[in-house]
Amino acid sequence: MLLPAGFKETIASIFYDKEVAIFDKVSSKDAEGGVVIGKGVQRGTFKGNVRFTDLKKTQEDYGLDYKIDVAITTDYEDIYIGDLLGYKLVTYEVTDTLLYDSHILVVGVKYGKSGD
Image (cartoon, rainbow, N blue to C red; front, top):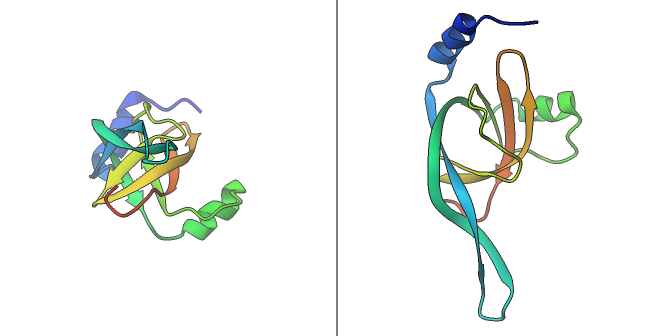
């Protein structure tokens, strides 16, 4: 179904009320020479509806065979699997993005230590 732009804008203005940061990943070497992947500079932000409840149902509905820690709906399209997202001092790694007519569902798991 093709939704008019005005409808999508109305959804965004009502539901996408949380600001989420997107960070680049950076790699470095530790003291033993191993590669360490971490959170780099913030490359931008987007607005979304951030959800921490009903995640088990989301996992079941989409056949995800792992535990998710966050589900975000948004109209922002520049989000990819493996991206790091920051919300309320917690970093999440994007594990799936699912495209719908009216929005994108982004799911993720906690990444590293809190705030990393």
